[in-house]
Length: 471
Ligand code: PEP
Ligand code: CO
Image 1 (cartoon, rainbow, N blue to C red):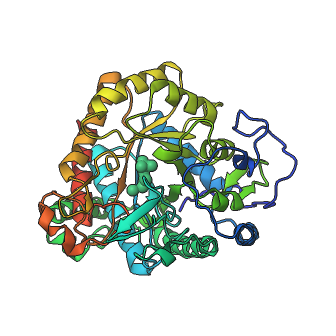
Image 2 (cartoon, rainbow, N blue to C red):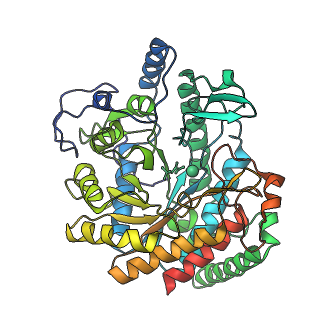
């Protein structure tokens, strides 16, 4: 977690008189002003009073993150926007209430730390680390219903809304799940803070992050070689008399949390005014993003995130036009604060090189200091013959290569990647060094939503991205 101790005093959960203009262009912004806008992808709670009751319980609970931490992340992302560092954002597509044990969180963190080491080592560029973790519980869906066998039922919308069990009763939206989500997020965050600040993330532990099923693979051995080099460098520094125990950057890691700000009832209830600056922050995570399906300029999600001061992202799929993106930049970052806005491009491997250049030109010409990030997962999803959603490792890598090529040609900085992964040995994405085939998908397919890279595929990807960064 971030070391910054600024802004620990989060104040009133209810709004009060504004002392400074928010980032929003709208003077009308309030934590609840999104309610006056058209909203996509929100559940219809069967009992509106129960939803209000859950919101007021949440509004009385402590913030999960602090404003000063969110500001530190904006600053770190500002260095990415300026081309001096790289951002790795990674984690689950949909975190599950059923999988919140220490092992699952630790193993995801291990993979992210390993990827960051590989990227840093390969490129010499600092890596900002953000998890899709401790709050990634709400999912947008292409269809509001799903057919399982002969039964049609409401779609699964993430554990913060309903259950994924394939029976209609489980799919009824239940607002008390928002309170459960808060408590899961709090305990995950607590463990992450302990892991990242309490010794587990110490660089001298770099070997311990290599899980056994990874260590025996080609990617794992390549990682071990880097770990050995890092060990040697640390031994060298100690031998030279450097006291590494006094060096926070060696012993601890700044690790931030993020999720899609989809379920606005939940996000509103966790939005608090910072007592230091008077600004509003969504204290459910350090960074929040707007999904591809909810980036409507006049819609509720853009309205809500326009007024909170966290660093935010917007997903840009293949239908995004340069005009729309410019307007999003104006609405979401009118003050042009570097690091405030990340554009998460997820065009698909076949489209990235044609669709991205006009968008980059428009944003650059307008002088918006954005972070350009590539999500190589969501534009490359397809359904296998066996009926499982999957992605091919080659398409994932291919979109990243296209993203880098476009930025090199435009003279802009390919600032980061955004990937879905797990620390487990799953078989959800095809290909990779071990070449997972379609018939192997059912072996260990455990995601409740999109297919994730397994730990070996994720580390393999980090090596490839490291090579692109160095080129
Ligand atoms: C996601 O990140 O899981 C997601 C649903 O992405 P997108 O909004 O880009 O489709
Ligand atoms: Co996803």
